[in-house]
Length: 243
Ligand code: F6R
Image (cartoon, rainbow, N blue to C red; front, side, top):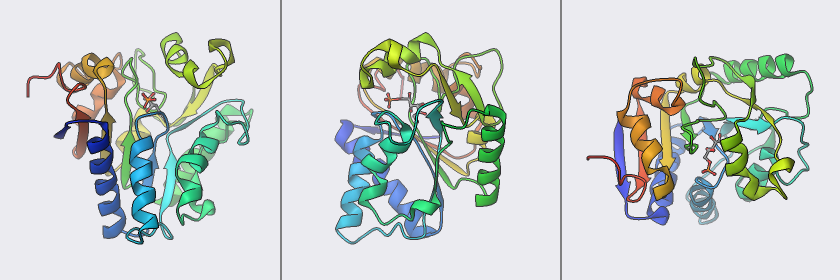
């Protein structure tokens, strides 16, 4: 595992975008695993700048997002589909047919999760998976549990995740209670993983994930077992780690 310390969020975003751009340059038809949430927004902005300045071509890139809320439509501004269109896809020359996000409107959870696993299989697996870190250690929407969920599945969001995500909604009650998410096994199959973490509020959980025991109670701790993980974190996020 490589850990890069940055002075602030902007440097984190630039470094993460450089790594994603390097992946695209090395393999133009690569499969990117993408995350939503606040953390990668700056990274996506830097990728857009690279594209608009002519140095990054997304025409052959394929993408697969980690997760989507269950029961909200693509047109809903809180859907992860809407987020990805707004924050990245509509600003670069990625082919919309090559972008994949679980379909939150499919009421048949088993069918939707099986369909998504098949898509990942057909794509040949993820080359570079971008991850953020939840305050409770979740990656994707794999919440703390008694066992690591393997495949894409439907999950009940924990109260702490609902609280953390209510900032995007009118109220905590408006936050969907379920989501479809890649499983831990799905995430671990990615060839490379890029974990992005910023801010002091994540210092404790980042230390637990990287230096504590590997346990499904801290889902991100499983990353200690992956052979190719890069962590980019700013000083406040690394403040509890003895590096
Ligand atoms: C998003 C996702 C989540 C977030 C995590 C951190 O697709 O899967 O695991 O990465 O909740 O969210 P932020 O970046 O908003 O702190």
